Image 1 (tube, helix red, strand yellow):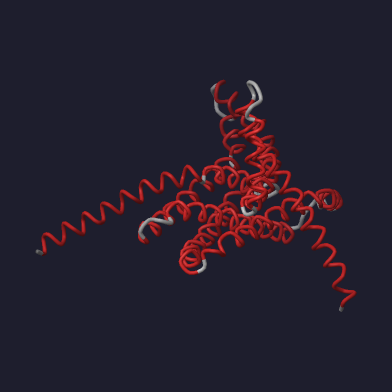
Image 2 (image 1 turned 90 degrees about the horizontal axis):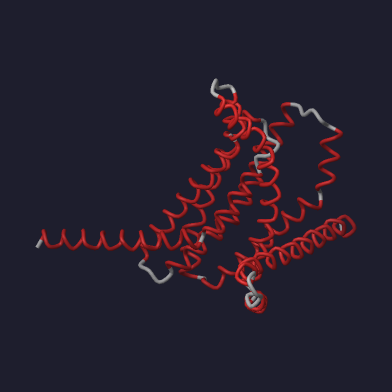
Length: 302
């Protein structure tokens, strides 16, 4: 009897592991788009940080991301079990926050440029404060993106056994964090790799090193633009998915452009992202303007 019970237990464990493996693969595919946005957003957060502090900043944000997921995984399981109707509104609030942050960044772009021009040399204290702000901002943004990853994963495993849900969510949380911040660390140190190769004796190594040195700053600038656009696309996508009318409207628009000769499939693939981006910009603008008006009215009310 004891042997039979042990075999039954081992069989159950094997079944759970098999289910977890399958669900994890499906979840990884579904969250791949968010992973790309997460990568772009977090890579651009390191811009402006001193070269010797880039990896410590990435590590600090990675730890914050793991803490975010340590909070989100049990919270998602509790919300799904007791108040499942709250998942969509909470995600939409997070999406609106992303749009707000993206538009605020654009809104204050010129002010920040003027401030940096007026104070070209930062003191050590200012540099530390700037670094802390970068880390805090990156962790805040990561929280929303992590919430979407967890929500997508939870939707995939919603009908599975509880232990399968927990194991899949934990695996996705760890894999996504390691994957994103491992790639971010590699991207931000491309220039150091280029410098190291350029000092080698072989012509090929020097050529590759020069290429990396020339490409690294352009890549970081590109990631800054892509990261801001990703805020609007992800945030706008969350908002439109939460409103059936908008979601179906975007699907209908994608279906219409799909009929265009030759370029139809490409246009159908791009249309949802572009419309989500436009909606995200509009939502972010409205949020920034409304909060600005509230801030101005507060002293008068007081």
